[in-house]
Image 1: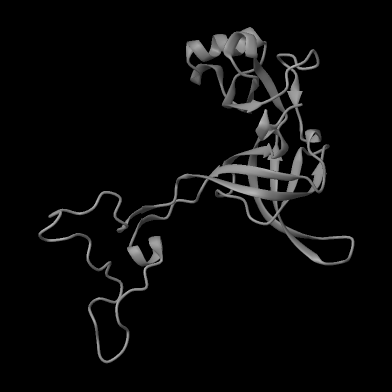
Image 2: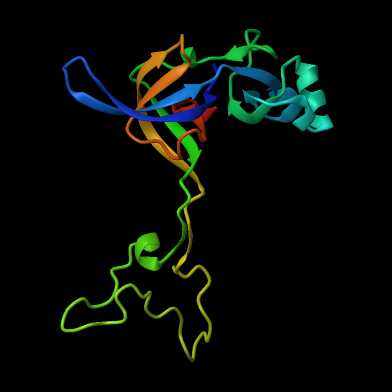
Length: 212
């Protein structure tokens, strides 16, 4: 059993379910992802497979990775990820992982890089309340307030919530439901929002395989 697949977030749309209700969905182009390496418990201490996604020109691939792909007899891929799997005779290097490993109604976890928002203040980044907004003008409307003690510890606490770079971090959204699977077009329709911007890389993982 293979626990996940690599895909590309295409964007959001809406569909109608059997009752005629509107369902907001995120469309993900997932796979087909060839198996580049089979990782066994006897050799590596755990069971997994390495899969690839997205074409990449050979001249842009390092010699080490080019040899890795040639050994598997797989065309160079832009991205590679490891996903958990129960290794058996059916799993072979070069085999393609497709969206048919999922089914409608199944719950999955999706890993992606959140949208970057640049440098933001504390009000937007950490939802600070801001300063007083009544009884005349105030210059503390969106100020962070006190950021450290004066006599002790005489410096700002490590990890203090302040203004800074927001977004652009790995995010996992859990328990998202698969609404539909299109094997012909390699598409997954996921109910709700998925982390990342359009055309960003995402990894879709089954929930039941966490105990492997």
